[in-house]
Image (cartoon, rainbow, N blue to C red):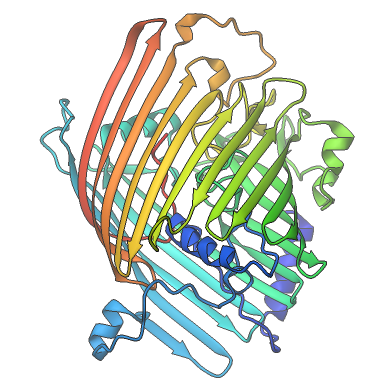
Amino acid sequence: MSRSYVIFCLVVCCIATAHHAMAQQSSIALQRLWLLEGERLALKNDSTAVHLGEKPWIAKRTIGTDELSWIDSKKNYSKVGAKIFRDHAVDIRGEDYRITLDPLFDITVGRDVADTGGFQSANLMFNQRGIQLMGHIGSKFSFQSAFFETQTLAPDYIRRMHDASGVYPSYGRTKAFGERGYDFAMATSLLTFSPHRSVTLQMGQGRQFYGHGYRSILWSDASFVYPFAKASFEWWDGKLRYSTMYAELRSLERLPKGEVPESLFKPKSASVHYLSIAPHPNVEIGIFESTIWNRFDSTGTHAPSVWAAVPIIGMHSAAVGLDAEDNSMLGLNLRISPGKKVKLYGQLAIDQWPSRRIGWQLGMQLYDIATPGLHAQLEFNHTGDYLYASPYPLQTVSHANQPLGHPGGSALNEQLLIVNYRKQRWMAEARVNRMIQSGGPQGDYTANPNYLFFLFAAWGTSDLYNASASLSWIVQPQTCTSLSIGLTWRQESVTQIIAPLFTSETRYIWFGLKSNILNQYSDF
């Protein structure tokens, strides 16, 4: 990271132990089930401005309590039963500190009954084990860390995703596991320090999400994790919030080989500035700017531009435009909540203007429909030609060969419907989406948008239907670890005018034990 952000991190670590009367700074997991429940509670409070468009959230500032409780914890358990079904596995606490430790699992087995290829006779599995450490010291400093180790035998459509990008969806690079499996690991961390109720400083390795929908056209959590430092400020009784983030990203293109056996990857970095205005508890407007900073040229690796040290939104875009070597994107977020059970939202992304390199999102979320716990979400997403692309190959809006916005990339239209229901420990979800995407260079975020490509029909069009349903019972509410059974149906075809070039179908039936603390995307 740049020298200024290293100093920032050292300051946080040095003064983190200070504490005075103030709410704890624990964050709500960046996972859809947690966010759905947290947002439902936040919208019930119509007397206080709340900022929901930037995630992860700090629990106290979003839902008014230090922790998000999934179920009634008043039921009596034995000591062993409480550890399994209610409490943290390890919980050490004192007058002004608390440390918790929990195991994490995502162990599923299944079979793709539609696979008529060479993998039909083999069982599929996802075997992930992990551990999560969380805690706080005083009321101003909190910390959390998690580590995951995974081996998997994936369905054929995920194998095709991996072969195309070189990474496992939502994770990163892999190594071989047996003859046809993948082995990979991931670690996350977050330190949060709030010296004043209007100032929050964070550093760690993880993901961010800007938006109100299931997808984000601007910046989502669908890519691999990255190290970052972030500062947030609030004014006007919390109605105005401003944040600035600096992140270290990378391509998967190697540096020239030196004396080491394996050279490093060519680096790049990013800054994100976000201004959120909530003039009324039911209205939230967000202004977004991201910049991918150049860190490598013919002379080798170098520091980012001095503009990277300017934490003011819009300054770089106004000075050098959106399509310079340091690649910027502008965006808008909008949330309108007509009542405590309805959220209307939208998003606009501008990668270059005037051009087709824009994207937008429209959506609606309904809570407690007819009965408590029944929620529905309808969403439309559009990404224009060459969105996330750049004339400079290393400056695409991506990290580790994955787009930082919509995971499907550019030149696509998507319709999405999700229905969730929860009653006590039982959860059910049904999800369906259709995505139509150009198969030509305009749908490839790595293509140079300034090249003249002829729009032949031979580029083809990809038409994807994806539907899934699951039923779960929450075993451990602290990590939302659930016994789950589900079905994923997927049909994908690539056509040239009217002739099919490629068709595949997946009917994946699975059963498993899953800790729900991270989003995993493969429905694109």
